[in-house]
Image (cartoon, rainbow, N blue to C red; front, side, top):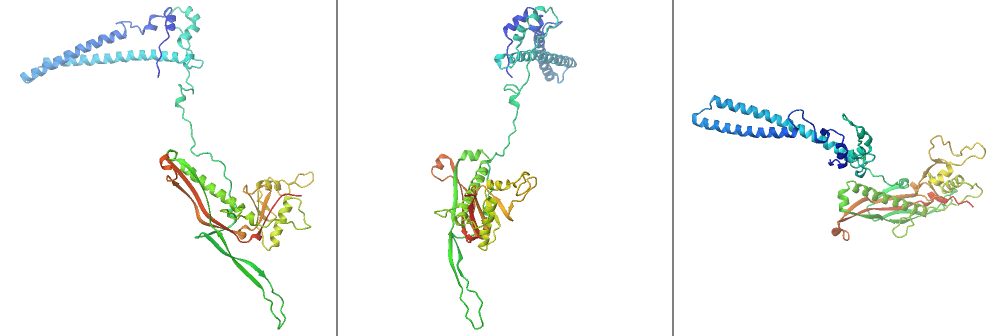
Length: 435
C-alpha cells in the first residue's frame, strides 16, 4: 500500500480553525503526550533493567561466598523483577497506542491522496481538495466536529480490486468446423499386405443357352476373365512446430495430431469420389461411374425426375441401387418443392416432423464432398472396394533439414491405401443441368 503525505494547502487550511489535537495527535489530559510518556517509561525500564542485572550479579557472588542467597537479597530481586514486568507491559501498551494513532493518520492521508484526479481517482477528492471545496464550512466552524466528505470506493479498476479479479479460462480450444466424412463407409472395406491389390474381373459373357431338341447340338457359351491390379498409394502431409511450443502448450501435440489425421481423411474422401487415377491419385467413383443417359419418353424436368431416371439406368444394368449421394444444397431444393396450388403443401414431407432422408425408396446421403449440382446413384458397396495397407500414423522428428540447430520438430501424418472399382455399372453419375 503506497503512502501519501497530506498536502500543505490542506494543513494550512485546517490550522486556522481546527483544535491543535487534530493536527498534532491526541492530547493527554494528564502526563503530557503519548510520545513523552513512552520516552519516560523507556528510560525507567532501562534503569530498572540495569539495577536488576546488578542485583543478580550480587546474588551470584553471595551464593559463591556463603553457599546460599539471603532472604533480603531474594526479596530485592523479586521486587525488581515485578517492577520490570509492570514497566514492560506499560511500554507495550503505549507503543501499541502510538502505532495505532500513526496508522490511522496514514490511512486517512492515503484515502485522501487516492482520490486526487492526478492519482487516477475517478470522482474521488483528496482532503486538500475537499477542504478547498468546503471553504464555506470551514469559515463557519467554531469548534466541535467538522465533517468533510472524502470518498474512495473500491472498484474493478487497476490499482483497486482489479488485480484480485481472476478470469475463467476454458482449456478446450474452439476448433474450426470439420466436415462429416461419409463416403468411405459406403464402400466395401478390405486390407492388403502388399503394394499391389490384384483381383480377377470377368470381361466376357456370351450366353448361348437355348432349347435343345432330342439328339440336337448344344451351343457353346463363352466366358472370360482378366487380371486387374490397383497400386497402393500414399496420402500424407507435414507441419513444423518449435520444441518450446510442444513443451509449453500441453494440448498442442493432441491438437496437431487430430488436425493432421483429419486432413488425411478429408483428402481420402476427395480421392474416393473424384480421383482421376493419374500419377499418385486414386481412381474415384465419379471417374469410373457411367454418365447419366435419360430414358426416352419419361419425365425429366425436375431433380426428383432425374434421380428416378438414374435409379432406372442402374436397374437396367441388372444392379439394384441402394442410395443417392448428392450435395446438401440439392437435397434442400428437393425438400422445399411444393405442390402446385394455393395450399403450399410440400411434395416430399411435413417440415413439422422428422423425416428420414429417403427418396424413391433409396437412402439419401448429403455431403459437402459432392459438388453442388452433381449426384451419384448406385450400390457403392458392390461397385468398389477400399483397401488399407497402413492406417493413419503421426510421427514426430527433429532430424529434418535444420531442425536440430533451430530446435524445430517436423510432424508427419501418412496412410497407405488402394481402391478398386470392380463393378462400374452398379452406379451412375449425373448433374442437375436442365436444357
